[in-house]
Each structure stands twice: as structure tokens, then as C-alpha cells.
Length: 283
Image (tube, rainbow, N blue to C red; front, side, top):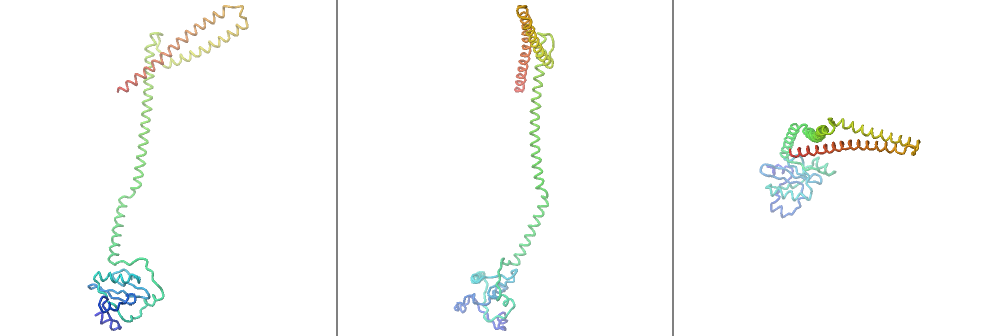
């Protein structure tokens, strides 16, 4: 039917792989058009202007075929089971052929099969829908992750501060227990020697009084020395040594008593600290 229809235009169909055509050894580039058939599907490969185009209706648009690729393309169709016919004769003029005689086409992207494009569009829609669903489900998850990290960091810092406060509290408690123990030991030991109960505050006041007393005695000694220098050492040869030696003996006695008490208090405080530390270590 197609062959008879083409005869109206003075065109003839020749089977491309027939022995008659193969003996002619014509380069496919020098032809004008090919009709390709597989089962019930027909399409044309035609030269428009100076370029070849695959006009398959299953594609989204004409596919540009280079001169070097034309022979390979036809061989590939034959391997896929297509029957190829060469259209011999002068083709009718058409507007596309006239336009492409003046300009050349550059095709950046190969057209896809219509079914392939629809499948790809459907896949893109499905992927987009899944992506939107995931984004909706995880809306704000990035901020939640950042908030969770900040919370964990704050909790860690809080634990460190609590641990430091606990250590400081334990240290203060140990010092307080040590002071209480030393004050109890002092209050228990002092009555045997002095007959009075001394607290840490009273002990501090006694130390202050002792130092004040020492300063007053030093001032008195200076005054006595100045008076002795003025009156002369010959008039009272024994008076000043007796007075100074008596005062020195009294000072030494008071100093020894105060220093012994201070040393005893320090010793008892150290022993109490050691005992408390040993008790805590056993626990």
C-alpha cells in the first residue's frame, strides 16, 4: 500500500538489505530518505537540508543524526528486527527542507521516548510527593536536634557545677567538723590546767591580748631605758637590772604559757583533722 502511494509522487521503495541494493554499494549519506518498519510501527529517517533526522513519532521530537552515525543507526535498527526501505526519487519540496538548507541545527539534548518521559515525570512526582511527606514529617527536626544538643550541653555544665558545689560543701563541712572537734578537745583539755572553757573565739582573743601585752611591755622597756640613760647608771647600779630581769622572767613565763596553749591547740586541731579523714576513708 505504501509503495503504491509513493508511486503517485514518482517515488520507489527498495529494500535496504536486498542483494540488488547491496550490489549498488551506495553510501547511506548520499540517499534522501529511509522508511523503517517493525510489526505495525512505521517511521521515517529523512534528510532535511544538509542534516539527517529521525522522525519517529514515539519520540518527543525529531532526533538529529550525524553523518558518521547514520550507518550505525541503520545497522542497529536491522539488529532490532526492523525492515528498512530506501526511498528512491525526488522528494516533494517542503518548508522544513528549505529552511534547513540555510541554517544548521544543533541539538543539545536527545529527545526521549514518550512513554519514557511520562514514566520519568510520574517517578519525579512520586519522588517529590515522598520528599514533601518526609519534610512535613520531619518539619523542624533540624532545630529540634540543635535544641537537644544545647540541652545536653547545658545539663553537662550543670552537672559539673553541682559536682564542684558538692566538693566545696564537703570541704567546708570537713573544716567545720575539724574546728568543732578542736574546740571540743581544747575545751576538754584546758580545764585540767586553767579551770576555764576556751572556745576558738576566746583563744583568738587571748592571742590578740598576748600580742598587745607584748607591745606594751616593749614600750615600757624603751621608756625605762630612756629614763636610766638620763639619771645615770651609777646612781642606781642594781635597781634597773633587778627590775628588767624580773620583768623579763614574768614576760617569759607568760609567753611560754601562751605559746604552750597555742601549740597544744594547733596539735589537737591537726590530730582531729587526721582522725576525721581516717574515719571518712573507712566509710
